[in-house]
Length: 278
Image 1 (tube, rainbow, N blue to C red):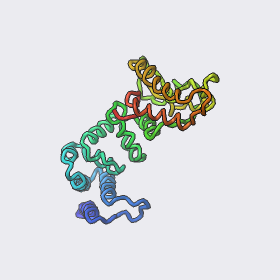
Image 2: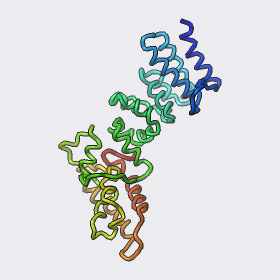
Image 3: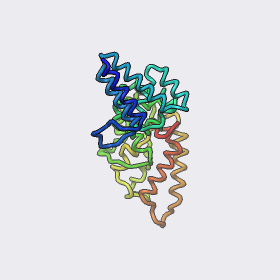
């Protein structure tokens, strides 16, 4: 029985001394992260053996207390909430400093309760925690399809490809967990589809496949469409077009993308799903 306790105690000693126990790891993580990972594996393999699980939990709480020193609100939540340490552990393992923010810990737990697949998704795709943080104050931060979409756009507007011109279906089908039925949603093109008209002076810069790709589509609620889509965004693009009167060199594709990024930054929190923080 004593060996059950020796394993987590040894991990804690290694972490405290700064020595890594991961002998065969190619990627060198911090001793703290390795110790937390080890305690998670120990708990998972000892779901029946209560003594081992409790011992591993004690080590994890000790690690959390040391990591969260000076962040009393976060530590109090991790210490007192039944699953608080789970949220802290996940954020530590994906390399996020949000673990020291109590509201982030609470929201992550809420999202994991709504979507049981979220934890495994973030462990497998740790970089997408940044997309989660970008929209964590929205109703959609638990949705993996949304996180993939936001992650592609969080560093700026991009274009993909589409094999159909039915862009509404492309957009709505990309988020199957949304209840689109009965709701008046408009699908906006970040870079406008008018550019596909042969009469447009910018015709030929973009392909139909690019314009109708998911990465170029934004959802706008019918409640704000006239104010946002048909007014504020319209004026922003008009200002851009006016910089290139007939007879002057055409803007580059990157200049269009830069303008679309500017508009996303200004209004991305109003889109459905949002692509910027609320």
